[in-house]
Length: 248
Image 1 (cartoon, helix red, strand yellow):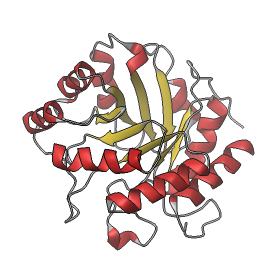
Image 2 (cartoon, rainbow, N blue to C red; image 1 turned 120 degrees about the horizontal axis):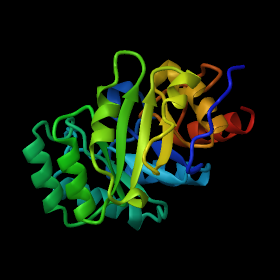
Image 3 (cartoon, rainbow, N blue to C red; image 1 turned 60 degrees about the vertical axis):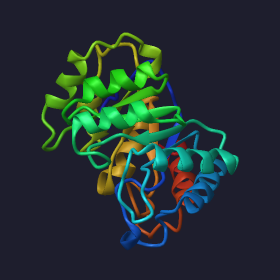
Image 4 (cartoon, rainbow, N blue to C red; image 1 turned 90 degrees about the horizontal axis):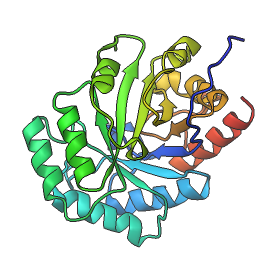
């Protein structure tokens, strides 16, 4: 087995991605409405998730950062008793233009605990600064390996991290390659979460567990359990993630 680099500081939280960019066409395991998202979040937390990531959507299913969408969703989750930190996606899927995303974030009346900003998208640094100014912590998402190249990480490194305690690096790995993790040495002193999608999801989760970083699972990333069976829910994926990490 290849040697694995320990990534510090250590934050071993498991985040559940409740819906991601999926739609109802992806199957009954994908929650869509605020009520079903709240139920899914409660089940995932009971199964071991320490954080919840959600992509807010309008009633017709379009991703949105509108305060009329984000606010009621956060209130539904918190009102249902979801007591762990809540993260919303702030990607171009919600608002294509950088200026529109900034305007939306500045108009929020109900704030999430964190927001995920992809550093391969235009205006990422300005959006992250706007979120921090509003008291929202930032997950700086970068893709590593595959077709991603070095540009997203270069953009993150060029962005001045003035408040490390409010910023986390969320690295999407194309494969469970320890060399990709070794490349994270020398980063600013921020917490790290590693995850993969689809076929890479479970191998990367095992790698993250060995590295001591945060991990992520959920139907937003993967629809199948480690043994290939379709997952019935986010809670089932979180439970499987806990077992997989324990047996890494």
